[in-house]
Image 1 (cartoon, rainbow, N blue to C red):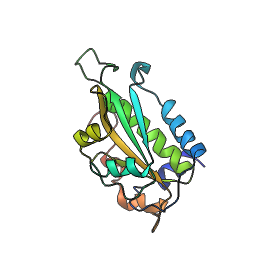
Image 2: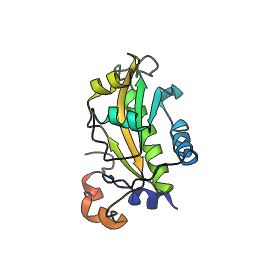
Image 3: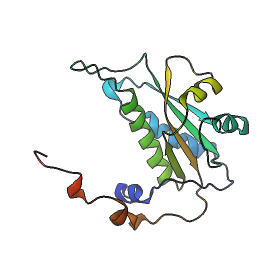
Image 4: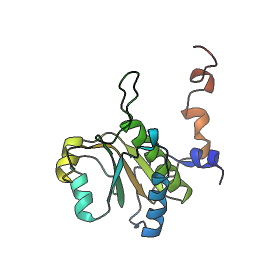
Length: 172
């Protein structure tokens, strides 16, 4: 499948089938995150895989999980981060987002549905999963087999702004 087809096929899944994601498939998704680029190759990502009933119940205290069989909590190690010298910008959130995106698109290629979540309570995640103090939960990626009505890959002409409203050449 071409990249543009994968990108258009992906959508936010909020209804999952009661079907487990096998370990081999999950390993392929995690490998996509491992090879994702990070600033100065610092690799600050720390990914917590949650797939047990107990773990998913703990996560549901902080976020809606939509009955997904797998959740990846993508954390950033705040002690292992590249900092832009000109303004002190830390790249942890950027790196975590690139990694999340790679895993999300890999899951799509493998026929799985995903939901990239930033709407969650990080304090609850930290407490429930006993995260080290230097680990900051940035994103949650729900993964599973989509249930319900699938979204059309052709929806983007109506759902997205025209490219002329978001892309500019040389000046705004």
